[in-house]
Image (cartoon, rainbow, N blue to C red; front, top):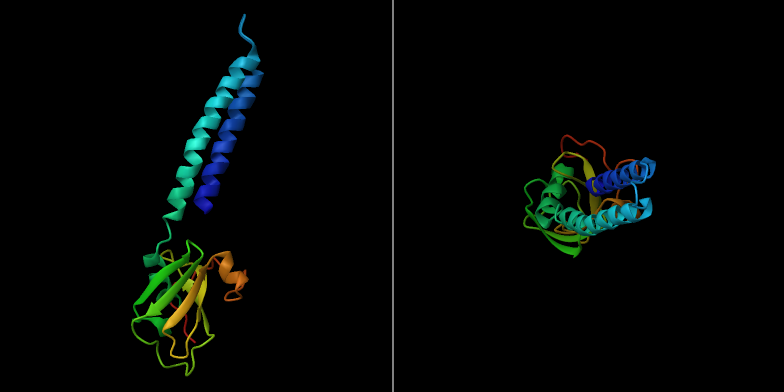
Amino acid sequence: MTDVTTTLDRLGDALESAARAELSLAPEAGRPRRRRFSSRVAIAVAVLAVLIPGVALAASQLIGTDAVEQSLPAGTLALAGTNPTCTVVVQDVEYLCTLEHAPAPEVSDWKGTVEPTVDATKHVNGGCRSLTSDGREWRCYLGQAAIDQQIIGPDFLGEYAPSPGVG
């Protein structure tokens, strides 16, 4: 979502700059400044109306189930080689994941265990909670939702994690 925010900030800044430049120009003879300004604003609004949904749609495509499936074992070494398969509960927020193989036996009862998830850039992007004792069913949350679910702390989200955690 940071890319969306940055894009929208840039668009807003450009619109504001254009409006300031327009207001500082002297009106042309016989042509009121307001009419010219209004037509430019109308054009800018039309452009934004097209761009904003496009940017939002592109952002929603960034986090697919494959990214979540890869982020689970990337966060915890005990989940390496488990081959998760995830389904969307709430796009870009919540996923249900099933592991093809049980996790490493370092935990005798996985139910309720929480583990961080790590994205392709090696940054903590959320976390998951085991739903079963054998550790094969997980409910995963991305971003703020992982904090709200008390899986990770607010200071941990976005932290660099160069390798899966141990223990």
